[in-house]
Length: 95
Length: 186
Image 1 (cartoon, rainbow over the protein chains, first blue to last red):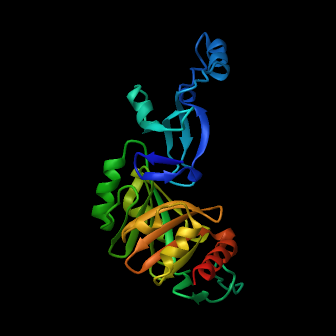
Image 2: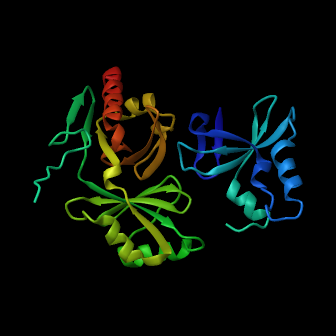
C-alpha cells in the first residue's frame, strides 16, 4: 500500500504505523464538568464503518508527521491524506 | 590525563572501506552533526537568522542544501539536520546554537550516528534492495529518512553519490546489511 504524504509524496506503507480513528485528536477537556462522560465517549464510542474511514497514521520511519488518512475499509483505496497538524489548526486549535 | 583513543563507529582506529563490484562503501567518521528545531511560531525567524548569521539555506521537505561549510537536510516539519567537517567544527552544535539564538533548539548529534558513503554505479541497485524509499528517482540535493535493515536511517543523494546515516549503536548491523546487499548486486 502506498500513502501519498502531503509533504513527501508517495511513500511505502511500511514506513508508517497506524493508530486508529482520527477522532482521537479531539481529546476532551479533562477539567470540564462532564469530563467523565466525555472521556467515556472518547475512549469507547467509535464507528466501525464499511467504507470511508478517517484514521491517524504516523510516519514513524520517515519525517514523523501525524497524518489524517481517509481510507475505504472495503477496498483499501486512499482518497485523501492531510497533516494532522493542519486538521487541528483548521479546527481552531493552536499549533 | 587519561590518554583516550578515538574509535570509529565500527570500533576500529581507521575508517573501513570496501569495494564490492560496482560500489564502494566507505565509513565516514569525519562529519560533525547537529539538529535544528524551530521553536513555536518562530519558523520565519529561524530561516532568516540561519541565512544572515550562518549563510545557511534551510531546505524544504525532502531536500538537502550545501551552503559554504555546512550541509543541511530537512528531517521533519520545521526541523533540520546540519553537518560540517569534524576537524573544523568539532563543537558544531555550540557554534550553531550561539549563531541562531533562542528562536530554535539545537542538539549535538555527532556521536549518535554512523555514516557510510556509497559511490559507484551500483549504489542505486544496492539501496533499492534495502529500503522502501524511491531511491532510483532521487536526484542530487534530495534527502529522506527511511527504513534500512529495520533501522531508521537518512539517505542523502549528492553529486558524489549516496550517504546512509544510521544509529551508531547499530553501525555493525547496518554495515553488514550494506555489504551483503553489495555482494548480491555485484
